Length: 234
Ligand code: TMP
Image (cartoon, rainbow, N blue to C red):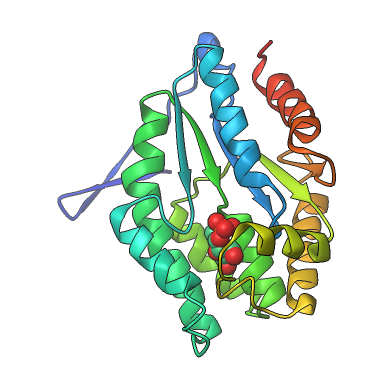
């Protein structure tokens, strides 16, 4: 039996059956955009936001690490190439600290307001970068990450798949100086890509793999096809 804990006392909570009009659960419009460095996910997120707004939807765009004042400060620490000595577990814990604040202050309130939340990276990046890339223990990361998110999971994830060699060239052309992750060895980025693709094989319903080699417009045609099918948009 489920128990409600209030004022330190446990009381039985009635388990209500959903009435027939509650059986259809519309998808929660929490969409995450993932991929290796330079995969174009940030551009695709901006184009998706524009198109959803044109379709009359309320849209909240955000990113990880970041999205809150505290999260943005943590992001600056994580991305600073001068912090080469950052320990992999410390890196992961910083990611989770930023996520906790972000889920509580931004993602959940926006979803409660009925907004489409488009998030640049989320928990799949942790599996790809910290588990596949850095080699942290998967069960340890999964366990804490699930608690940090309070079980919140994306309804849909668009994974922009690209050879990291091509992505790094694109990223280097874009950024004035490479950040801490971009500066990592190619083998690290290859493990990151494999980590993303493993997640996509495990959860094919949630994660749509979008080939990202083409130009932004061609890739956006694929992005919109996935979004419109999932959310019944035209
Ligand atoms: P980006 O927004 O330019 O992709 O940069 C964010 C960086 O943060 C990216 O290199 C990947 C890294 N990151 C992790 O390592 N783990 C995570 O869980 C998240 C969300 C990002």
